[in-house]
Length: 225
Image (tube, rainbow, N blue to C red; front, side, top):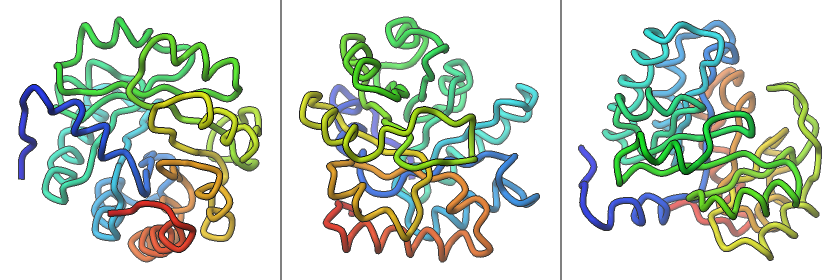
């Protein structure tokens, strides 16, 4: 199943930013093959998958990106590449996710195709408002709760999420320390998509963990389909 590319493709991708967003990091798979984790995650119903492979050679990340892109297309899910605009372009990902120290959104767009989108990370209201000026396609807000999956960002929690949601008319992805047990309040605070790393990547059964998270999102009133 391949993506339809046309004038409305980018808007169509943005409209699909909801549900469960899973980051696949080769360092956070419990020693298992990240491709297998991606397959199980998608079989469990993940709406969006991101590849994050910061400490790995380019050829390794590109190979993973191309394979995961194909699997995501087969499942009808979105595929995002972390940081690497070049790899997102080559692998025909749906888009790229940029951190505060990565390329500016406008520069990333000069490399990407017209139907590829750009998201960015924020950890405070000030960062979110500054990011909005650069017109990303979505904004990630975190951390919701303390997390060890990456260098600990500020923990703004659901109060920060609610504030940003009230001021910014873009899809908002909540990230940071989210689990099956605490996802409900995050959904109810207005997150369009819920992003997890360890909750799936380190789970004994990633497919089951994905299914349970999607069910919890649905129960809390979030859109998953």
